Image (cartoon, rainbow, N blue to C red; front, top):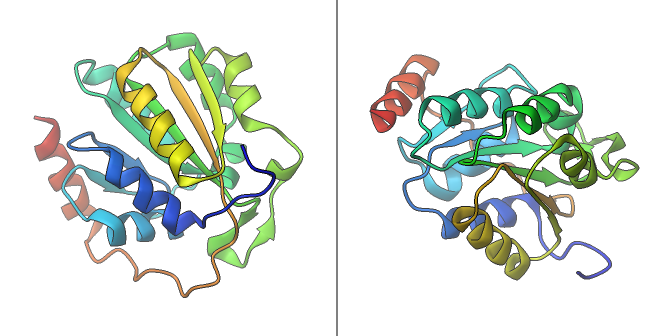
Length: 191
């Protein structure tokens, strides 16, 4: 692992989508959903519009209901800090098909880049302590590809903290679908 991140959140999300196929992905609110839509808009993406902090809770429910599918929660550091209790719930329930990917830029990028406590709190260690079977930290594309391949092939729950630098490019366009359409599309891919 290098000493500082070598890619941005948008590049990390593009890298993530290059490693997955038909897995359902529940995308956190704000720039994460927007970047996911820009990287690979598909029915298997559930774009959160509002409800910050609940992507991992929704993805956990999907994983429990669909144990034969790998399910990915695509989260942000600030969102995880808002809902730390869900790490304990995941650790207690131990869904083998749950992969929690956290994009950590150390701030609330969507609302003005206010700093988060993730710079002081090692979220991957909290996940490990909570009972995740697999917990890793990466800060470059090759590391993310390697750890995603491992998480997709192993029994979870898995946690991958992706350290990124702040993105100075303009944000991706807002999610273009209405919440009802997002829900219907996502439901279809789970049937």
